[in-house]
Amino acid sequence: MPNSTGHPTRQEMERKRLDEAASHKHYEYLMWQDAAKVQADFAKLGAKECMILCFYHNIALDEREIVTKAKYACERAKNETKAIRFTNYYDQFEELATQAYKEGYSKSQEIFSLKLHLLKSMQADFERDGDFDGAYRRLVSDSCWR
Image (cartoon, rainbow, N blue to C red; front, side, top):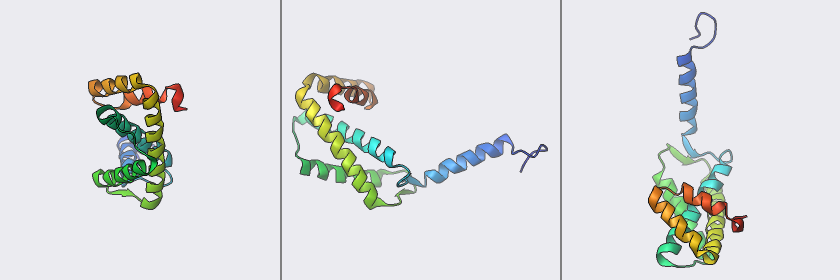
């Protein structure tokens, strides 16, 4: 209800803002509105999983194996979501996410094969910080990423 000036109160504005945020979290990814977020999240996830596999097992995957890992990552994300629904168009989400994951994984694998020192320093950052953000920034700032 508006106050005496006819404008909404601060509490009403805050409640509206929270309601809008909650309604957006009805979906984890709202296609096509969140397409850029899907691409960024899954390229980063592909790079992270590549770093872990290359560092601990020194295994290179071919394109078919990367696509299989990408589809598994999509299913895992769907099962682990905290939102009410994961996405409104899962097939389009999976296609976009798979492509982004594959690109992130392939680029990372190529860079790690050329620059072992980068892989080791990223893994050290990841283990020290407990998250992948700093290590990922190091990877995407590399000249080979572009």
